[in-house]
Length: 193
Length: 241
Image 1 (cartoon, rainbow over the protein chains, first blue to last red):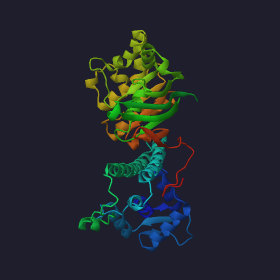
Image 2: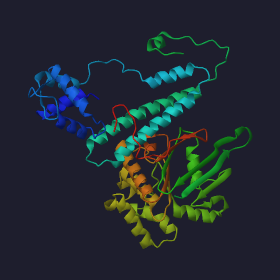
Image 3: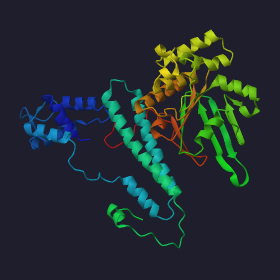
Image 4: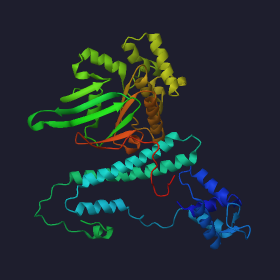
């Protein structure tokens, strides 16, 4: 979540004070992403430094200082909202690497490791489901953000499920059997064996 | 609060000799009034067997099953059937509504079978349907209802009357995510209203509606989440409330 771009979006509606920006940010993200005051002002300072926003006076930074979006800021916001041109692979999840490495380390109970992570992820999912349950129907920001977290967690849990099933279905390898050779494609994907 | 459902070291085996299959091994579980417990596991993990045994539709090979404090293995088949009709509600993936009966009649049928007067049973059924937002669909037949509405009728049938235990097997079935969510909200509120609930599923999103998630593998309970604590705050990156 880019605080920077969220602030630009709020300023695209018109000039606003620092305090107002913080309150509106929290209201629209359903208070799931509360900001501390410092974070808002620091981000605003950087936006101003980069020429994306302008402040209305030379006074001290604070809740009463007003900000408005520059043309450059408007362009940056539009660029960010458009689908990213980069078609590269998203960064690899740390958990994927952890499970891959665990499979290679002798004596590690991989299903147990997978279950420990699954329990934690389901616990987090319960947290976001409870947020949804307690939310009013018109708290759309909160509902949408909670859904986003739930689907993200769900994807990881499903991946853990399939990793576990693949491990269970694996025929036991003879201790003396040679390591299967690594195909060029697998080498490219960076998969360890 | 007292446990509505208790399983004590319940095991279930099918077949014999070389074809012997242990569907459940030493499963112990207690579900209290007001609590919704999810049993989560992959296909073939024994979770549906656990549900049919908890619902007294099937006998355990060993161990004890207590419903409302009564050991069901000591009950006659008749007493057990009566107890099942009166106190246990089921929600299945395929809604299992009777096509020739209206929504109200589907809900009132188990009450009438149990000896409740038809007019009383119908009134209770209408009240249950109204509570689930189906007041205006009460006289419709199943083929006139959407999937989400049909499942709400099935839930009304499961919680109507004096039901104290609701058992659900993948209750959101083929419903889309928001209709599935609505079904889980209804099960939650049924539990809060004084029923104990058990839902079996392979789906983490469904399971996350429960107060407690129990993980099953190869017929055994291998793990569970701590009972959900509402006062707890998660340390999630970007989320520090």
